[in-house]
Length: 94
Image 1 (cartoon, one colour):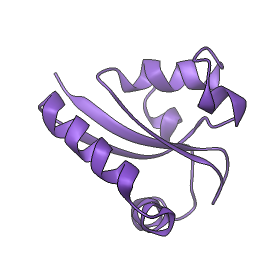
Image 2 (cartoon, rainbow, N blue to C red; image 1 turned 90 degrees about the horizontal axis):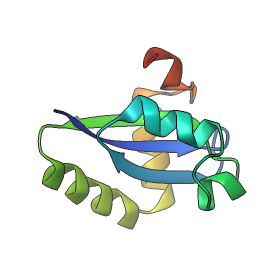
Image 3 (tube, one colour; image 1 turned 45 degrees about the vertical axis):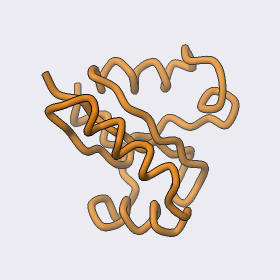
């Protein structure tokens, strides 16, 4: 089984959210359909812009916590290194 940390955004350079999951396609679908009540629903954050995969959940959680402590610009730089146009990567999952 794989575990994923992901970053979703409202738009390019918009509001960011970092999460961890074992079922990436399902989790992003839930964000897109506004079925997860809270921050992402309130701020319309549903564009998958960055993903990393891990073999062990403890490693994914460690990375998620690390990224959440990063400065906003570091997160933007990380996204733009792999996804310079902030394309929605969700379509590659389905």
